[in-house]
Image 1 (cartoon, rainbow, N blue to C red):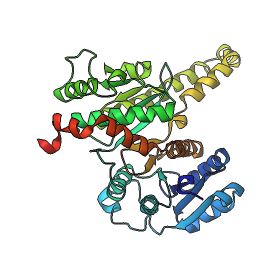
Image 2 (tube, rainbow, N blue to C red; image 1 turned 30 degrees about the horizontal axis):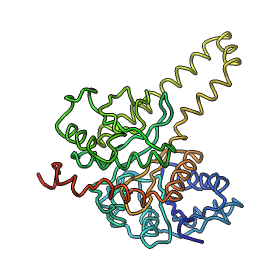
Image 3 (cartoon, rainbow, N blue to C red; image 1 turned 135 degrees about the horizontal axis):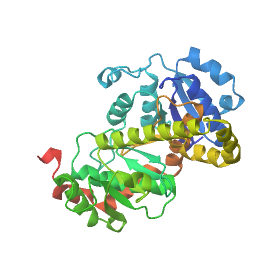
Image 4 (tube, rainbow, N blue to C red; image 1 turned 120 degrees about the horizontal axis):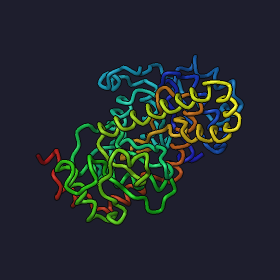
Length: 350
């Protein structure tokens, strides 16, 4: 078995761990019969779940981890737990036993441990969290979704590079278009950091793919394939979108429950409604990738169910199969970010 076939799994992270995690792996094993998983967690709880599945027994290797990082644990505390399921899973990527890691656990702990253990790729100042979302013109990529509240122009350029490479792998787009999220589409809008990043992107090797500034409504409109922003704004936009989808879903349900004629209308429309539900199902978009690290790191939503976790596994395996980190390294070389960072103000130079 080669390293590229193996994914490390934190079985104890998430609101419904380990049951949802192991059930999700069972679904993933059916989809990817050649994949293998190193599963880290409490043996007393996880072993019976694995034993109950014929597929998992052949595709998973369980390794006991005595400690668990809770969802509300501070990253500084989590860093001291050497035998946690999350730490052991990340360590397996560092040692070369696994090509990537997936966890539905504590986001802060996952980021802190990944940065300290795996470190960032050469030329990357800060990792970014990227994920796909639905739009009127197909799925789009958004980043950063919560890792970087403090940022500079160089970070935004790095995010754009990593985001367009991620869109190529995740969405299969040969030349994905890129937009910087701003308060207006005009060139004079936004602060100096956004304008500096936009100017640098126009002069970069991916300049032809850079659309310019986009606004909030362009996310759902699908104006560009990749939406680039800082972690604070990106996280707010993501949560707003999730809330809007739930709100609209609830309204549609109420409409068809309003009376006998409405229920009759549902019978005629249920095929289309089912397709709409599948398109907007948040589980389909589960699995955010921490881009810019020396290893594939995927964060599943903590509250997801088995189907959602299986989709996050799909994302992780796609990143591994497409040798995503090598492609980022090649993109950085073409971008010559070392020269670019010298031209752009950076936190380290202020």
